[in-house]
Image (cartoon, rainbow, N blue to C red; front, side, top):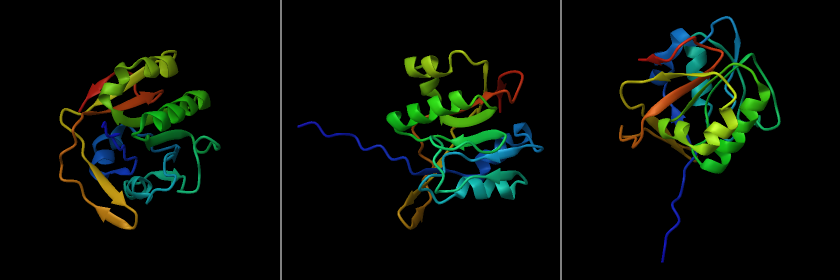
Length: 163
């Protein structure tokens, strides 16, 4: 009997991750942390602590709303949710920085959704790790992320960057 792999969407961006790219995030714009639905809002808190003006909360669904000047978010991990969010981001046609597994930029669905945009990438030279939130309990990860992360940007930077 085959077991269905469980995909968790409740992994959270650490402050260190946003700190890595803070020089590329526009300080003079209102950021929308657009993927906070049902989250602990950790990412928004970290961005505010780094001095950014951030909107969004765990009751706002990106598929139904449009806020801020720039989307800055860690999109869902599960493919179905990821595709929905990516389509919505493309539809909104505003500058963005989204964090995602780097292997996804080579997929057909990525090209179908974002292929018409002039994307640029910020590529970390080492793995980015995430925190896990299980219900009311915060569980720090053990720095064993099995993939590399890429910051996918649109109308943010002029060229690809390795950090």
